[in-house]
Length: 330
Image (tube, rainbow, N blue to C red; front, side, top):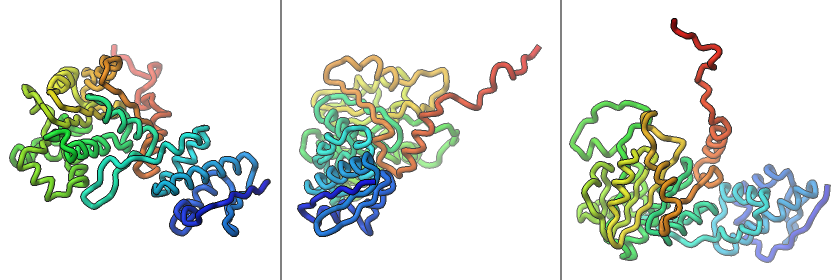
């Protein structure tokens, strides 16, 4: 056991890092098996030498972010601890992020992980960006934020959001109402993101003017979309033909973002995912970026990350009967 002292310039940054009722401090102590105390503008870290070194690096990184005005929550604390343990402590400063856009309630939207940062940068630099990754990595939300930002800055005249109307492993039957009522359940995640960014009143105003369009993928056929920011969500459920059709809708002055999760394909087994094909065919084309997000980029409840890791470790189907136990019909 050793004890190491850290001098602190501004105690308000320490308060920000430690969190309300020291909840962030408890995470550091629990995850790294150390004890941290505050004494006269100094932090004392006690524990095993290696763990103390990790804790010191993590706290230094968190203080650095706090000094740059970044808000520190339990999720960011766990992510920075993971970075330190992986030997990426020197990259913590990269997490001081630019605001992508501000929501209707005044909340700044930023990339929260290095993977998300790379994804947002790719959207800004490329005409077409394909974001592939598990649930909760912010693929759709960040794409919508980038679209709203481009629209507010008059880089585009219209936002077009689309996704294939494929049911997630269930047959829902015929839905009541008119066409809009029938497609709304499939497009709800896109509505939610737009409502968050713009507010319902502004959203409805732009929808009536035609500046925002939310429609099933089938409605894209035969169109050319100029001066538009187009987002194709749940692209893993497109067929090869649908993906080709979507990609060829791109007009002058437009930008497209395609998002999907290759572990959640709801197509029939005999159909190849258009997203999988697009990643394979387009990876070497200039001005098309392919970004892969991982479980480390999950920004939902921390259990989501653990669930994804569990499924990653167990990719082989377990419900299949081993060949030696199968009954052969004579």
